[in-house]
Length: 188
Image 1 (cartoon, helix red, strand yellow):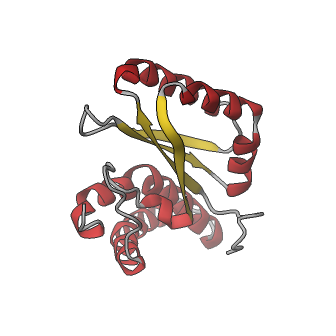
Image 2 (cartoon, one colour):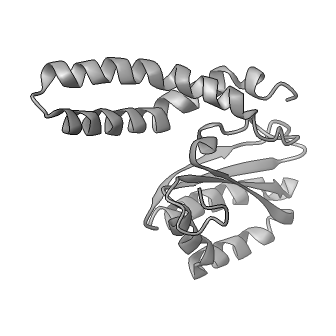
């Protein structure tokens, strides 16, 4: 993988941590809807999650944006639309935004709610859970594609990988991460 992030074809997840002024939480919630509307118009945008504060007296939010590549995320990051919406948030929050990028498979392992940053899980843990999540999918979906279609092997493999990647990204890996969060992030 290219270490400078340029021409990086891997998906990227970006966590943005913001501490909201306690008396501006309702406005910040409206701002979240606004940013969702703005970012969803950008090519390469995959999705957005919001981790809301556990302690209302210290309202710290984490907004997780997902893009299909670093280059497309870079276009969002450099856009005037992003600059404008970030500027709007400054009067609702305290301090500067804290950004954390996770490239490729790291983006599947999203940290739980942060009052303290848990850091990244150990790579061996990510590898184990990736195998746990992908092996059954590949086995079942690969067999299903082979049994129900007359595709040549290369096309059948492409269909299998496409289905597995979609299910893993949007459903299986987020579920596995939540289920194993105490093992992945033992200090939280």
